[in-house]
Length: 243
Image 1: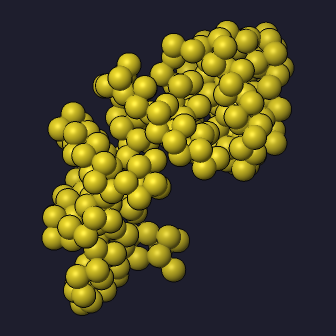
Image 2: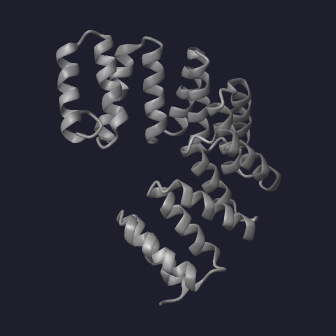
Image 3: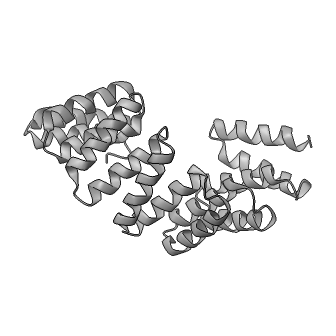
């Protein structure tokens, strides 16, 4: 077998082409040959997470952290794996442990805020996201997170303000555009929301939320025929998401 760096690159190439089974097979074999190699071990856990083999991914991420506590991606991977299993309390515990090591790192701060949000700790999550934006104003994910927290508290005008500012900073970011359009819809600004959703579909036709959002905003305006037409196109593009 090639050296660890070449194998690491081969695993990533398989992931790039969505060959998850092959990537897991290669990563599993590589971990036997290079048991102390962090990068190979992390790729195996990541592939298992991608394959929704959550138990295996969780165990491997925990093993990685026990050997390589200073590697932030393993902590992020474990938090995400726990969240995907609905283990919110466990994810919170891991996120808090990670904070003691990486309290200045955006990715950990963002995960802590997301866990707070998922736990329904909306005020705490709002403060966390606001603090993150103060420190990392160039991170679109934080602006999206704050928008979601505000929407969950029915602070629609505040959410619109945050989403509107984010649009200026990240005009080409799908998640920012989608949250802005969704916020406008929530505020009852249906014509404006429709325009933004049409822009999203034009730019990102492979994103289901754009089609869902446009369908919903058309229904809110009683544009039933147009909504039916959009839903029909979406069903043709995404038959599994639009049964």
